[in-house]
Length: 127
Image 1 (cartoon, rainbow, N blue to C red):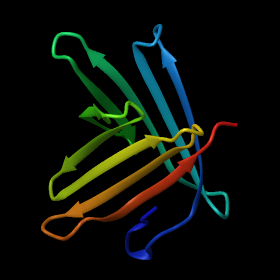
Image 2: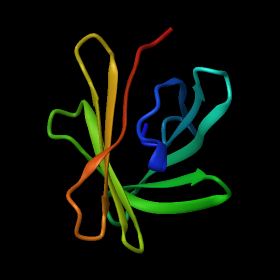
Image 3: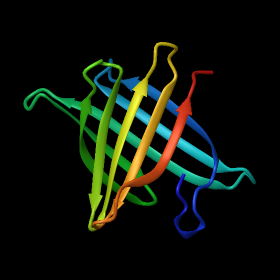
């Protein structure tokens, strides 16, 4: 994970993923810790489908704020993409689930006109 001027840091990340309301809502909670055990990331995403527009959306909570964005399913049906923009900061994320059930996620950050750079990369497996 990109940690500002300090550069990249390696985290131990736990993701809790649950369907709720008979599968109508997907809840994703991520908690990441640095090697010293201190908290580095805590986020909660709520993904839902809107019958009237035929689209998926996510409301994500982190650091006392929330954002909303559209979620698009990958053609394979084994993942999704989403992104957020706050002023000059723009993120783009892609989540994939492979044939073994391993979940990989890559998030890139673009600041202004700069080229995108890796913000977060993770691999999660069911335990």
